Length: 402
Image (cartoon, rainbow, N blue to C red; front, top):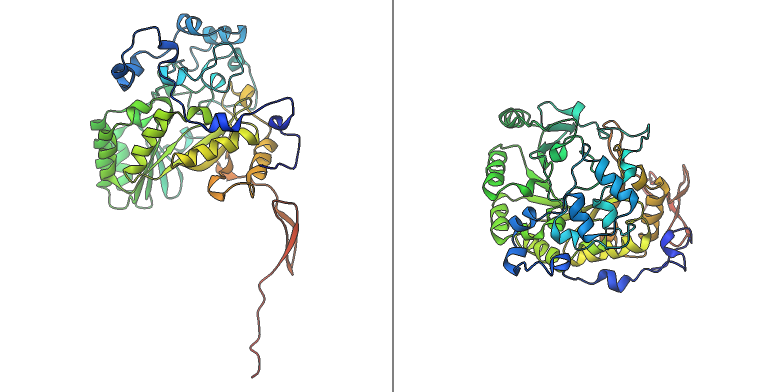
């Protein structure tokens, strides 16, 4: 892929990025657990993965060469957001490199305790848009339904770290019956997004009861689920789960993958099961410093997603959540990445770069500027090659005499 500017970190000739290696699918099993005697049947059970998550300093020291910043972060950030990583995802972490793009996402660092006056505990303003505890109604026709406060692993940039994992200042207190009552009596709501925490951590039976209640409300047209389970815990994506979800179409699933290395053989198999059940899949990435903040990584990620039958959907600027400054990139980085991809790969592969406006303004798209000039005659546009084209404004035409 040609990129016009050399300012991108990944284009530095001293920095190598092996596209073919990153686009390949590999299985991380059993990785750090190869000498533990774990049976394949156990490894492939979601319950075993959850029971054996890496959570403590001692467990991390057993497997990784921790930096001082990481060791201090593990000791000091435990009251902000719990630390937990499934064995499957942990096996993607480079043992000796604190700059590993997988490691930066899930291992606490001391920078999480640093104070940035621009950061907030609720950067998206969700708490102020809750007509019922656990139900966020910020857009006219859709709601966010927070159905759990737990995840399989915890992202260090979590937007809801104030309520997720059970160690923060707030607790998620969803009022279930009040939420269903509100939805039943609010006919403008046609779209419900289940999130949390991670909805797919709920049992099949519990999730089915929630979906059944929602489907009983006539004006709810479709349901979405936001989940990082497919990348953190692909063992959870069983044929039984997919068969249950299939009963509630139209149902959509948004996954969360930030780096091509996350898309393992097991993840691809789980995503294929979901897609095979007729569930449209989209991906929401967060732009993170040192993880995916260059066009080469993003190109490999979106191409690999399409190979998994997942449409790249959003690329988010990292929210202003407390303790995330070390992971946020300059705003221009996201714009530059989109420009580096637009026209150089299929449009299906190019996500929409968005900022979730601080305080509850919602998602605002931010695009490269392709309009050079505009007047009453029309537009002068710039294409991906930098060439300019004129497109005339529509004119009122008089009928011609025959």
